[in-house]
Length: 180
Image 1 (cartoon, helix red, strand yellow):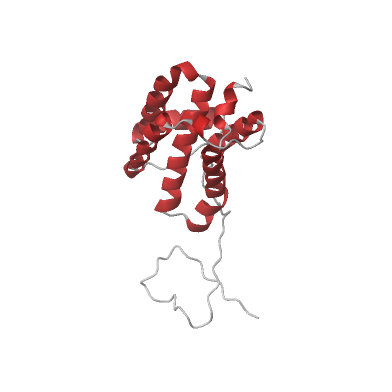
Image 2 (image 1 turned 90 degrees about the vertical axis):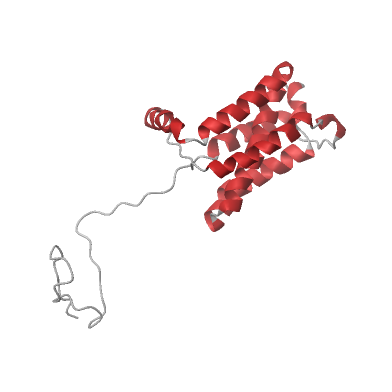
């Protein structure tokens, strides 16, 4: 097993793994834009296909084809019922439906023809790389935080800012005058 995993112990794989983790745990929260979303897609696809090809080296074409197919389905609205079922049953996951994310599929042919034997191999335990990779695959779909408020809710306004005696505001509000 350790010998098979040596193919993921290379500089491009480790850079993509570090970028994916940095992006998913820091950059997305700080910047949350199209670039951070695409970075996850490109790195994730490269890592995912390379990772499973290491386990199934004789099935490399099938791994890359299935990775592309699963990614297309994952990014489509048709997978929502399966995601909801999984979230209710096992672990809450979330994903963004964005058809422009399919541009990341261009990384798969690059990964397919990439030969990890021709690159520098750092002295890192491949089992550790595999464990961190598996964690990264699972951690990329953490749902957005939800905040709930108990009733009643209070909003404090500075005196004289808003006149609620106008009929413009709905009558469902109860007004309390705060006296210091």
